Amino acid sequence: MAASLLMTVACNNKNGKYDASGTFEADEVVVSTLATGKILSLNVEEGSVLAKDSVVGHIDPTGLSLQKEEVEATIESLGQQTANVEPQVKMLQDQLKVQESQLANLSHERTRIENLIKQDAATGKQLDDINAQIDVVKKQMTVTQQQVNVQKSNIGTQNRGILSQGKPLEKKAAQIEDLLDKTHIRNPIHGTVITKYAEEGETITSGKALYKIADLSVMTLRAYITGTQLSQVKLGQQVKVLVDDGADKYKELPGQITWISDKAEFTPKTIQTKDERANLVYAMKVKVKNDGYLKIGMYGEVQFK
Image 1 (cartoon, rainbow, N blue to C red):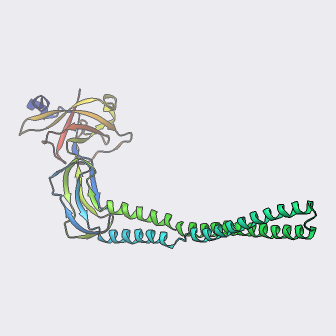
Image 2 (image 1 turned 180 degrees about the vertical axis):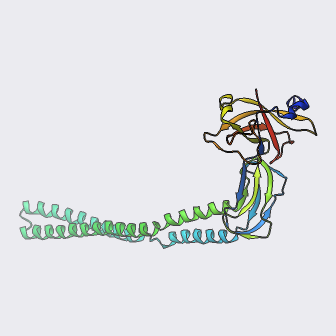
C-alpha cells in the first residue's frame, strides 16, 4: 500500500507543472517543567520517539514532600487540641440524677403528708414546707440541665473553631500534592523529539523549556496560491503533493487541504507561484501522511486534482 502512495511521476512534472509550492512544517510543542527543583532524570534524546502521557523525567520532590508532611502533622494536631465534652457533661448528668431522686422522695413525702392532713394527723405548714423543698429541687434541676446545654454548646463552639482551621490546611495539602504530581515530567503528545534544552542535574524553575517535540507522522505543507487560483481550491479537497526523489523525479503523495487563509499577503521571497508576476498570494495548508521520508523544511509542490 505504501508503494501505491509513494508513486514516482514523470520528470516533465519537474518543469513547472504544479499549481502551488511551499515547505513542510510540523505542529511543534515546547514541553516545559511545571515544578521547580533539580532534574533527577530526563530520559529524552533528540530523534527519540515518545508516547503520549509517558513519564520521561523527574524533578527532585524533597522540599515539597517535607512541606506536605508539615501540613499533615498540623492537621493531625488539631484533633488533639479539641476538648472532650463527655466528662463535664457526665458529671452534671450524675448530679441531675441525684436531684431527680430527691424530687421523687419529696413527691412521695408530699403524698404521705396530704393523706395525713386528711386524717388530721399533719398540719398545713408541713405541706407548705415539703412543697417549698420540691420547688427548690426543681429549680436546681433546671439549672443543672442548663449547665449541661451550656457545656455542650461552649465546647462544641470551641471545637468547631479549632477544626475549622483544618479546611484551609487540607486545601494547602492538596495544592502541594498537585505540585508533587508535577515533579513527574509527562510527555503531552506522541511524537519525535526535535530539540533538547535541559540536562539531568540542572536546577530549573517552573516554566523552563525542557525539549521540543512534534508529531511527524502527519506533516503540513504550507503552500501559496494566487488570487486567481482561489476558485480552484476548497477545504477538504484532495490534492497531489510532489517532493523531490532524485535529480529529475518526484515522489507523489496524497494530501488534503485543511486551511486556506482569508487574507492575502506579499509573495514570500523563497516561494515561487504559478504566476510569478503575482505580488499577492494566499497561504494554504495541506496535510500529508509521512512515511518517514518527509522532513521539516523540505520543499514540496501541489497539483490540484
